[in-house]
Amino acid sequence: MRRAVSRWELVGFSINDVIGSGVYLLPAAAAASLGSASTGAVVLAGLAVLLLVLCFAEAASYFDKPGSAYLYTREAFGELVGFQVGWMTWLARVASVASLSVGFSRALGYLWPSAKEGFGQSLAIAIPLMLLTAINIVGVKGGARTAVFLAVTKTVPLLIFIGVGVFFVSTPLALSVVPRADGDLGETVLLLLFAYAGFENTAAPAGEFKNPRRDVPFALVVQIGVVTLIYTAVQWVTLGTLPGVIESKTPLADAAARFLGGWGGLLMTVGGVLSILGTNSNTVLAGPRYLYALARDGFGPAALATLHPRFRTPAVAILVQTGIALPLAFSGSFEFLATLSVVARLATYFGTAVAVPVLRRKLAQPANAFRIPGGPVIPFAAASLCVVFAMSAERKNLIAGAIALSIGFVLYRFQRRPDGKVVLE
Image 1: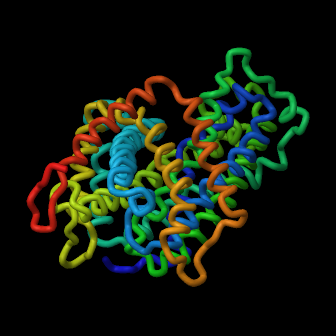
Image 2 (image 1 turned 90 degrees about the horizontal axis):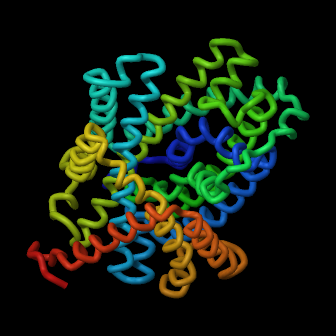
C-alpha cells in the first residue's frame, strides 16, 4: 500500500467520521429524556467515550497495518475472535453505507424535493456513492482529502451556529427545559454513545498512513476533544435559543432561523446534508480495508486481498462493498443490518478494550508508543462501560447481533490456505 496520508489529514478524517447527522438531531432527542441536564450529559458522554478512544489509541500504536479492531483482537485472542469482530464491523459498514446514502437523499429532499422519491431519489443515492467509490479507487490520498474537505464544510455551519448563537442564549431558558415523562433513558444513553461513534474506523486504513503508530493516537485524542467541545456548545445554544426544543424535528435549523433568520435555517439544512455525505465518504474509504484485512488472512475470496496495480488501493474490496450497499439502499432491506450497528460497535469497543492489557504482555511496545496511564484501570473501565451500554440495547439489536455472530461462526470455518484452497477448520 502507498503511505500517503499525513497527520493532519488523519485528524480531519477522524473528525469527519464522528460528526454526522446525529448532531443535528441530538439536542431535541437528549432534551426529551434529560431536559436541561442534557448539556452535562453530552460532556459526560464525551468523557466516557474518551476511555474507549484511549484504548484504541494505545492499540493502534502497536501496528502499522490496516484492520483496526479486527487486527487488535486477532493478535490478542486469536483468529476466531478477530474474525468475528472484523465480520461484525464490516457488516455494520455495509449497512452504514446503505443507510447514509438513503439518508442523504432524504436530507437533499429539503433542498431538491425530487430527491425524496422515484427516479430522483435513485439518482441522489447512486451518483454520490459512485463518485465516492471512484475517488477512493483512484487513491487513498484523494479519499482522505475529500474527507478533510467534507469535514471542514460540515463543521463550518456548526461553528457559525455556535459563534453567533452563543450571544442569543437565554440562560433561564436553557436551564428550564423539562424532560418528557415518557422519555426513554436507555435509548438516550445509546444515542449519546453513538453520537460519538465512528472513531473506531480511524485506524482501518493504517497501512496507507505515513506514520500510523504515532499519528493515529494523536488524531484520536484531538478528535474526541474537538467533537466534545462542538457537541456541548451546540446543545447549550440550542436549549438556550429554541423554546419547545423537545418538539422540534429539526432543532438546529429551527434555532438558527430564530437568531440568523431564514438563511440560518438553510445553512443548517445544507450542513446536515454535507454531514451525511462526509460520514459516507469515510465509510466508503474505511469499510473496504476491513474486507482487505480479512481476505489477506484467508477469509473470503483472494481477489479481495489484491491491490490495484497503479493506484495501490484495495479496488476490488471497494467495488464489492459498493456493489452490495447500492442494491440494499435501493431496496430498503438494509434496515435489518442497521440494527446490527449497536451490537457490532459494542463488540468492537469491548474487544479492543480487553485486548489492550493482552497486547501489552504479548508485544514489545515500539519506541515513543502511546501508553494509557493507570495500568489496567482505563481498559477495565472502558470494557465495563460497554457492558452498561449493551444492557441499554433493544432486544431486536441483540437478536440481530446473535444471528450475525452465528453466521460468522459458519463463515469462519471456510478459510483459504496459502495455496488458495479452501479448508474446513
